[in-house]
Image (cartoon, rainbow, N blue to C red; front, side, top):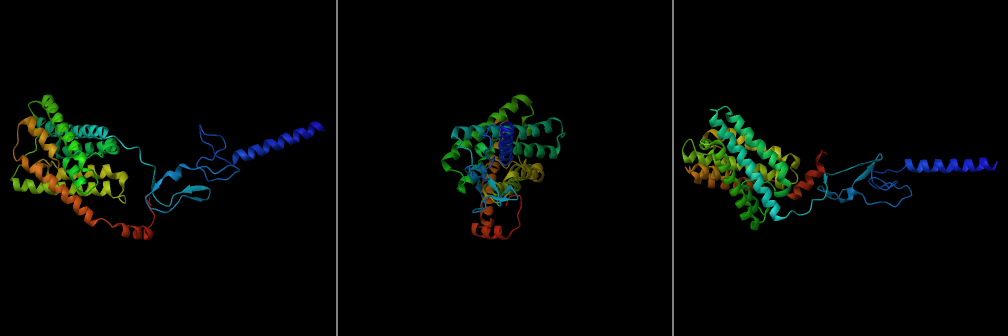
Length: 316
């Protein structure tokens, strides 16, 4: 009888332990029995969840427990990584600009060398894809400006410190020159194919460069500075805009949109024809695009009302 009582007591303890174990969650490497995300009360102190560190863009709404699962009421993002040093930012800007200049200019040179085998669509796709992959790979480090016009426009809108503008533009110019001379050595004597020069009058070239730079910076400002835009698709939006602009203005001006896209190849090929158009029009167009987006964007107070009445989406 004594043995039977001891066996019964052991079975009850085992069942109680199993019941307790199935009522809690644990993750690999964590303390057994501790809830995975917190919030469940099974005899343990409530642990602080990683979700409580999220920065909610909708404001004021917490994570709620519905049917045993957590679901957010607003779009949230994890805390930003630590501040990146200026040297790393400038270095990433140099590498990103070098890749863009090399890819865009090389495609134009190869198109000339192969007598149009790349086609206008190929040239547009090359630059657009280059912009896309650079934004995805270095955007979180330097912002992936890749363009003095973009840097100056961000600074004018107070989204970028003026004290860093000279360093960014210097990195962009040096990267463009390095890429141009590398291409000159590789593809000599076809460097002239990578130089952007107007095929018509300088008035037409100035207007086209102004407008396509306006288009580019309008989109960049929207996806990069407005938290209500779909920021996850920024690289696709900017890359697609570059492709569209090249399809529009490529045959007439080379569709520079970027002073250093013209400057580096011009120095390498010693061809400065109408270079002032490509140094001035993109900056003025970018300032115009950034300014117009700032004027038409939804004010913060209107945004709060719109969020209250708008149906939920994957962002909110």
